[in-house]
Image 1 (tube, rainbow, N blue to C red):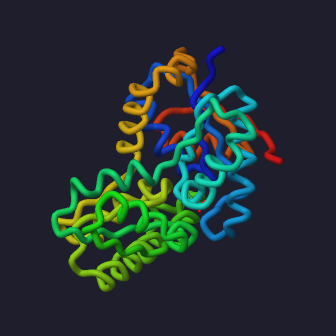
Image 2 (tube, helix red, strand yellow; image 1 turned 180 degrees about the horizontal axis):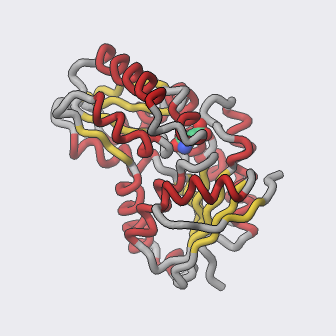
Length: 273
Ligand code: DGL
């Protein structure tokens, strides 16, 4: 029996990860689940993000996914470890749940020359300190400065990412980061919603600073993982299909998802409990 790769996010952000994964590996079957009804997660407590993420993982397992990618930094920071260590052995130890922070942390060491790296992320991800810890394990010489961007996800979820109002919030956080550490030469967009703001981020970011949008790194890391784990690869369906699910109104999701994926889509509503 084969099943699709599941990709989960609190809302639309994980679509930036899904797009890169599908561009690199179009042969596999995919299921996307966005918990739009309860987004954003970034301002929620550890317990709530964990509970919601576990519900989503269970739901994707019920749909037959042998492998689930948390296409959400907040869920990766707050729920991944508990799910991997505590829940997976009780649910089904042959399935896997992977996150987006580790592959992103892996790539920065090859990119930064000044060894000063900035991270923009949700308040939850910044408070968890996960980027600092993961980067320190791999690249102990790198200094990491994180800045929480509480408004950025809302700008994206409400389709205001290209509006003039977004400029104020983008510039404000870039200024804050560069005051905190003027030596930064590399900035991680540590939230999967943020690539939608990339044009404005590029506009306000001084030249010479590399902006890391994590989708491509997550995709190539997943490809490498599947190459190393033939047992998992053989359990993934290879029909090139995509099904999309949201916990909110499908019409609204379809409209916004088409912007992220750059083609029209159909979505189905479901509830998570
Ligand atoms: N896209 C998610 C992330 O990468 C979080 C957005 C949210 O706050 O729900 O962190």
